[in-house]
Amino acid sequence: MVTLYNASVPMMIKYLGNLKVILTKAEQHCIGKGLNQEEMIKFRLIGDMRSLDYQVQSISNTAKFLATRLALHRDTYFPDTETTFPQLQSRVDATISILSEIDPSSMENKEDAEVLMETKSFGTYRFTGYSYVVQYACPNFHFHLGSAYCILRHLGVPLTAFDYLDTQHDLFVNIETPATPVTPVP
Image (cartoon, rainbow, N blue to C red; front, side, top):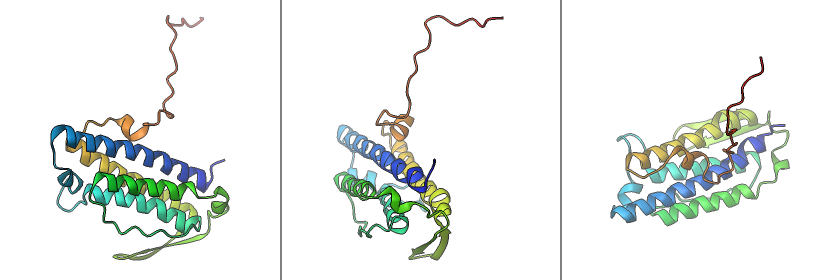
């Protein structure tokens, strides 16, 4: 049975792990090509879009606020001041730690619970537990992860879809095909 917990927390932990691999490849790319890491971290695809550091911070914030708003996990303050790859990696590690502490039962029967999301710029929004997880938190998490991936691909970091989807090699299970084609019986 799909629950709010297993539809969100394990997925976020997995993709935060993938993000760690992506950030490692980005840092290695900078070192190997002699590129300025700060320029990569501050790069925007277009002027009104946020930079790589913001994308990573938003991925982290989306996950940690899920823990706070639905699992009633203590709120952890991150000042959003990361400027290096090691700092971004530490932020991702801290977020994985927060999610790993969530007891699945803390999110049980919260599909219809009221979830309030207060923002600095846009006011307060009301969700149900279900709409918060399914229609906001998970899509927002992937929006920022996809944005980070696209920034790095644009800058030449050699990433593939498998870096985004399956760095832990637990999603795509290769099934051997028969050596000779099977002829259907008429």
